[in-house]
Amino acid sequence: MTEERGIADLAPRTDRLKRLFISERTILGWLTSMHSPCVINLPADFLIVDCRVDAVRRGLVFTIRAGAFPLVARGALIPEMEPEYNGLIHLKGCRPGPVIGSSGG
Image (cartoon, rainbow, N blue to C red):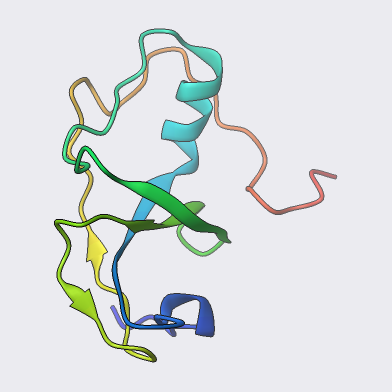
């Protein structure tokens, strides 16, 4: 599948960045359950530097900076990392909600 990438997916300057997509279902679990899975493959020094809604995939895209990431040149596409979780990704009892970024009406 080919996705269109926006300016938010391009490095604003040379930096050690990756993008991390988290589905709306996982985010709802984080907000409503103490027993939701957490991402275990983030470097210890990670810092969230940006976040945007991805309505097509129904979730959020975090831009993360960490010293362990390779440098991404200014204007280059920031690579996306695959999250690894320490628990079940199919959250029991997590009801689907409105699409993130929608008016909810």
